[in-house]
Image 1 (cartoon, rainbow, N blue to C red):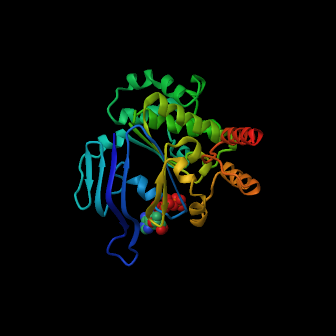
Image 2: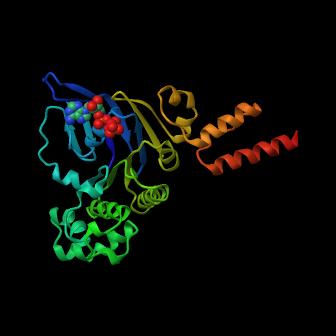
Image 3: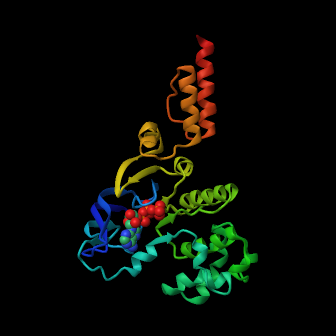
Length: 289
Ligand SMILES: Nc1ncnc2c1ncn2[C@@H]1O[C@H](COP(=O)(O)OP(=O)(O)OP(=O)(O)O)[C@@H](O)[C@H]1O
């Protein structure tokens, strides 16, 4: 499903003394099957933007096209339920939304709510657990008896069980340790490959954005201020630092080497492997001269 925002504005509490404009003239296209990371400071409008992706919020100006759906400011869209099945949102700390007495019941809740028969849903629980890296052992356990990381996987399995075309992730690794973060990010990358899903990830981590996304959108005070591939974004490190944003450690390391030795690498180093490769090329060049 292609996603197109045209001149989207969102104001909260319109016509009250507390009116607040959270999005200004958002104009963006997200291609079906791409992996987009949205980055910005607290209050820059990321969550407001995300909630327009399945009609939880409606623009107060402009239009959002989500595949066959068009959500226009001022027009009441009646048929949002099918859209919500196509766009699954994993909110921050999704494990807080678990409520059933077994993992199986929790995972089956969504698909059954969208009309799947109970026996059909139960027959697929194993497949959904496998997608999130859990074994069948947890199936009949209470979700509350699991570890924090496992609970989060169960909650994500519940969203995946609805077979969304678009998976929206609002800081999915918040609160996990470094290993848990890596495992979770690898899981989403492999899901995107297997299922050809579109992923929209909100993260505060430039490392995660650089490593996993095809495209990065940078939000600042309700607008999109930069947009491009990780390579394009990290070619302009000073811009990011000027906006008060983080940059990956590898980029800072690259800059330190470039400044110290008066050299210029061909491309931004987004991973340690990139650094090693660039250094090898540099040494080879030095050897030749
Ligand atoms: N329900 C609301 N009523 C009024 N203002 C709101 C509401 N929700 C958000 N805002 C304001 O809109 C702006 C954008 O908020 P939003 O939550 O979209 O930012 P964010 O980038 O997701 O922040 P964070 O990283 O903290 O989640 C902020 O100034 C916020 O205070």
